[in-house]
Structure formats: C-alpha cells, structure tokens
Length: 213
Image 1 (cartoon, rainbow, N blue to C red):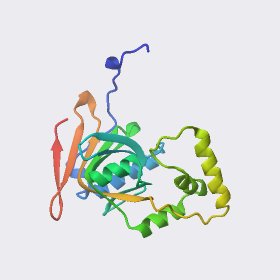
Image 2 (cartoon, rainbow, N blue to C red; image 1 turned 90 degrees about the vertical axis):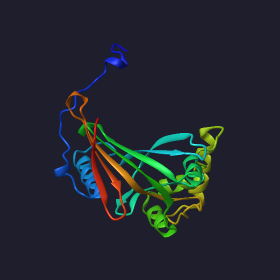
Image 3 (cartoon, one colour; image 1 turned 45 degrees about the vertical axis):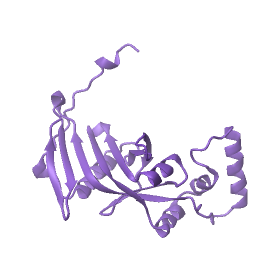
Image 4 (spheres, helix red, strand yellow; image 1 turned 180 degrees about the vertical axis):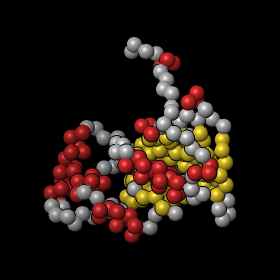
C-alpha cells in the first residue's frame, strides 16, 4: 500500500442539510433520500448494515437489503434460526445504517424489531425468484457446513423435489420490521464540519435537532 490509512481522506462538498428544507416526517425524508440514491443509479441503494446484540450486549453486524419502508417502519427478511434471528429473539433492540458514499450521505436508524405477520412474509416469499426460494429452504443459515458440495447437493435435491413454481415457505423464514425511535441524517461537509440532523420520536410527532459533527 503506497498510502497509509492515516493519510487517506476526502473532503466532502456535494451538498448541505438544512432543517428548513427537510420533511418534518423522517420516514418521508428517508424515502426522498432513498429515491435520490436510486435515481443516481448507485449499486444496491437499499443495502444497509443491521446491528444486533444478544442478551449479554455482545454486538454483531452484517449487511442486508431493505425490502420495505413505510409509516410502520423498515422491513427485511431472514431465517429466524440464524444468528441475527436468535439475537433478535433475545434482544429486539437494533440499529440500521445506510451509506450512500457517492452522495456523501448516511442515515442511522434505531428502534425495536418484531416479526411481521406470516401472510405478509408469504406474499414477499412468493415474489422472490425461484432460486432464492429454494435457497431459503436449502440454507441452515449460520450453521457450520463441512463443504460447499453439501450445500449444493441439498439445493439440487430440493430443486428436483419442487420442479415447478410451488415452493413452500419454510416455517423458520420470514420478515422483521424495525419501528424507528430515532433517525439521524448525515451529509458530508468541508473541513469535517458535517451536517447531522436527528429525529427523535415523541408521543404524537418527531423532535428534530441539529447535532454537532
């Protein structure tokens, strides 16, 4: 490496974030930024880091894809028996981070996660490509497997068992929804004096505050 990590830096100058210009509803503001990321043709604009912790507080994070965002919260899908599923069962508090580096933006979200209704999970499962549905059946997510060959053979056995489009949703698979209590919007600015606007949920509305960088 020709350049040390300490020497790597980029000055942000693409935009600003002003309280007078953002939506009073943070979900609508998030949807606006997400659409701008989609319009900019960023790769995987719905990618997010999901951070969870077990009952002892030991944290764990991984990148996932957001599949729905509305007034009810942020929805994603997974194997309930996975590491994240076990952690959410022990401790439903979680956090999300969206990074749109090309736009010099990120959004942090914190809140409580709960499973979504089975019918909603079923509807999304049916919309997935056939191979993704077979993969959900084949994968014992987060468990140790001796070789890739075992996983491939299990997948092929299921593909042979379900040659058509009628593939059942596993009982251990489905959706989660994070109901936000806090959202923070970050816009990079010059001199590391970044803009940070934080929404905190109150009983019937949201409190909008500016944070120092």
